[in-house]
Length: 105
Image (tube, rainbow, N blue to C red; front, side):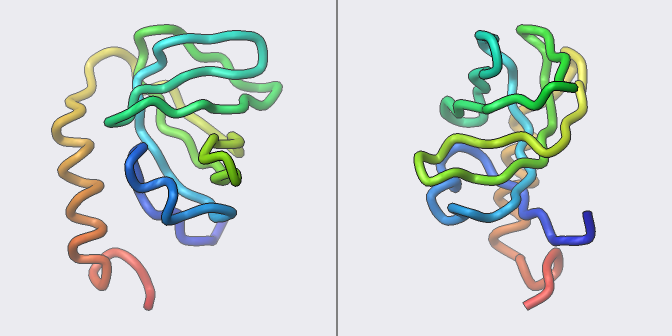
């Protein structure tokens, strides 16, 4: 994946419909082929067959934002339980506030 993947949280999803993004969130529920993450708001995530998450763990997903603002996972990584979500939100904020540093125009 050579495409740029902007870091987002739930409030930013509407700006990235049909685009690939990167999101860190806490798994709050797992139901079949979907999960709900807390990423400064709840996000419904459609899992792929290789996804193995645990409730209470933080995950980073690279996913495509759907029309309904849910995410379709392309790949993900389990970050465990020791994640500072205030720091995650600060990074998301910085990458959008100073996007010329982080992303091509």
